[in-house]
Image 1 (cartoon, rainbow, N blue to C red):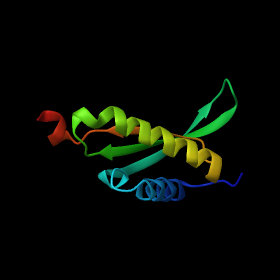
Image 2 (cartoon, rainbow, N blue to C red):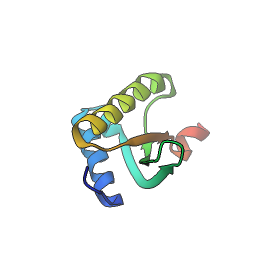
Image 3 (cartoon, rainbow, N blue to C red):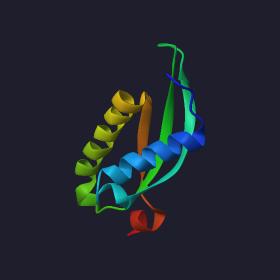
Image 4 (tube, rainbow, N blue to C red):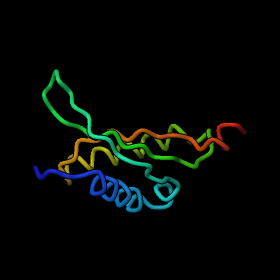
Length: 93
């Protein structure tokens, strides 16, 4: 598995979101941070993604993000956890 830097991880996640279609375009990647799991001795990426969807649609959107995580791992060899965040203006509404 090749080593990726933050910019490459952000690019891959953005690409997978675009590939997901309309729902994927409602998200914006805010950054990636490399983490280490000392128990399993593996590295993984935490990727923060700001989503702009109705609160009633969050469950479906989480399913989409989970599918993207699976594709990142199986097709790109990237172990990532996509962490959705809600824009402040949407959370305040």
